[in-house]
Length: 237
Image (cartoon, rainbow, N blue to C red; front, side, top):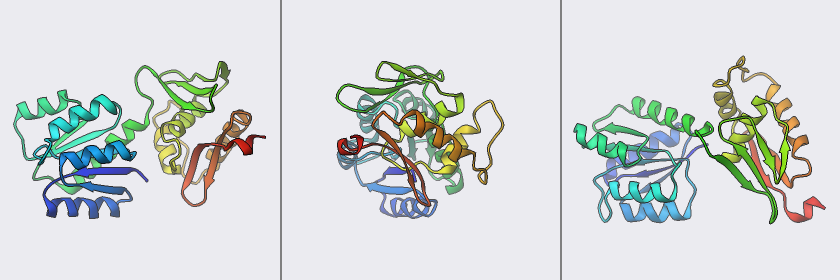
């Protein structure tokens, strides 16, 4: 379940957003001003942010610029009454991933949010994804090519295995649902796998074998999905 931060000072709108997005399956944390938003972003991990611009204490634009310096990949949707072209350009140039003006349609907000979160699950253009395994090794994945390394040793992965592992690393220590995986796989240049297929379990089994001596574990969270986590030292003996 994606974890969202909603930063909105209008109590009625904030409560409505929390209720609707919780009903849609998100874990939602509200913030009433820019200072509270920054404190939450420093202490919690979120998958996305819905951000008003006209906030007390610290403006939404200041929060956005502050956030981009610290969490450059975190998806942000601006939700504001400022509907001028200059305002849109300024918000997007400051690092917002999407911009929606008030009043808005809740169905459109949810569609835009889903698209934004879906894009964020895909490997980014350039760079790499990393996860610390222990004091001497990291699991590293190229973010554009199906390449991965455990420490200095390359991992032999198919394109689909790489896409699955990229998603698990991006959401390390969080549950990734079957639906999340299938959404990402449907962007791959091969036939889609249906939700009723057992193919996902086959790929999970393959990844577990390839990570068997790594100190990493793909845990099956019953009824929810899968979680990539570091095994405690005692479990590696």
